Image 1 (cartoon, rainbow, N blue to C red):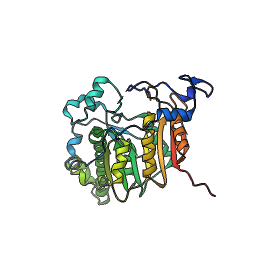
Image 2 (image 1 turned 90 degrees about the vertical axis):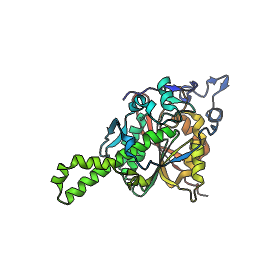
Image 3 (image 1 turned 45 degrees about the vertical axis):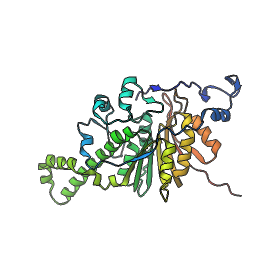
Image 4 (image 1 turned 120 degrees about the horizontal axis):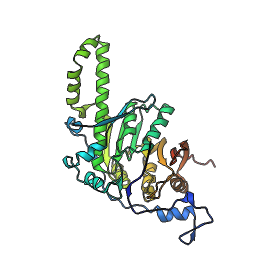
Length: 344
């Protein structure tokens, strides 16, 4: 699977992996701690958080949809809208943020402060799905957060495998409304069709099902999926991490998540403080953060080494490597968990 970045952000060429401790950077001796202090300044909140409710009539979201399906091992098939549909239909879609037109004009996968790449399914998401398949995680009865969700494939997997609550968050409201919510509905629709077939087979109605399958599928597509029991488990949010956290903290009690997924979200060191605080505040005791990432993000400066340094300095989480890819631009899946209190 090929990969390249096309980010419209100020160039940052610094990579700690390329500089040893005895070399100079900008006339100063390089020190990871000093570098993090200089680079990882807390980013000012730039987008207020809000919650998005699925529309009561949802079938129009999938009208003329071009879909893809990813199947990994024993995992259930995951369906999602192909990103090319947004290029072709940008003028017809609701897009107050203007990200559909801007990304098409600038041919950019990320426009800092405007669009954070959520319309694209990045390859580290597939890496994490493969690791989850290997681990056999079922998510039964757990609360799950898909942080920086984009297409929402990780949260959708948790939904299909028994999670009791799944919350999806992305920076852009357009991504949530035009991609995440439709993808969840698309997969709920698939579950409806499967359940319906199983019910009829169990009632000795297999032949009737075959004869009426086309009519039944049309009925399901026209159904009010906002009332679907799986969709009832989901909530959808947009906004930057600082305002998202503040939004959730208004709720009493504050929900803590047993599992937090976050994929390809550590590309910009300026976002590390907000990300770390969000993970710290929202992860339940004994919970796990699954992070999928690349070693380094050229053009934006972040990467796993910098983030591990940042996390180590704060002393809240331990970081364990679940998988390290060796080919091409190295990719990783790591797990964060709260450090155990030191015994006195």
